[in-house]
Length: 273
Image (cartoon, rainbow, N blue to C red; front, side, top):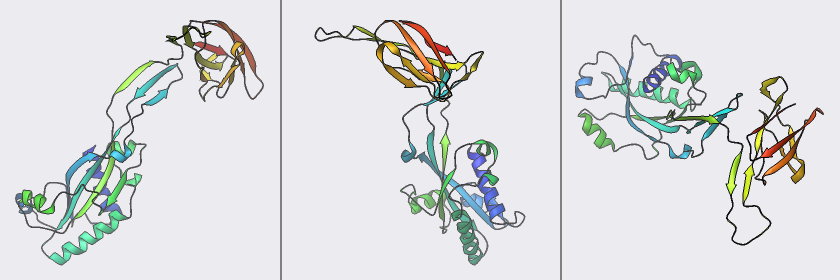
């Protein structure tokens, strides 16, 4: 992913900055003394010096993707990582360095969102917008003296450039959707509340086409006066009720209706309509 980002930034500078790659190099190595000694033409250096999590984008809830076959994937949300580049320009004449650095700053500042047209590799396939910050530090900028001291080269004017990317932790759990659940109740004093309650749920689908759920169907348990609306894929779930037989009544805005007998404890209740 980092290599794809490097290539995307290179394309951004070449395409949007109208730079001639035959006259100006764009490089990503650490600009240390040995690297500087090998330069043969004006060079823009983008040195990736820091990666850290963007805690403002942090999410704790899991991402649930429901499938038509009644299963679901459960994914941890991505970590959002800020990648910080130190951008410098190297040329024989300092006026050329300043002129080119200002040009780079102008180009990058025009794109707080990295344009799709320049994205390379995995970045081009992402659904997320790639956000950027130009010439902002947000506390991520290390001490210039410390950074340049570690490079053992001459101090240069620089631009801090930050790109935020999602890090997929590739943790996926797959299982049938849980729509029936037994709840054990410990009563502190005797009441009419039963010792066990059961959660019931299922799916409304078109008769003969189980792969097609009936979205926003109205489902009612007559015996308890409970009603819920199925989601866009036909899935529904009720609050816990006592064990025993009950009747589910289903209707749609188009006037289609059906009923189905069910029993708890039991499996999920799928209803053809």
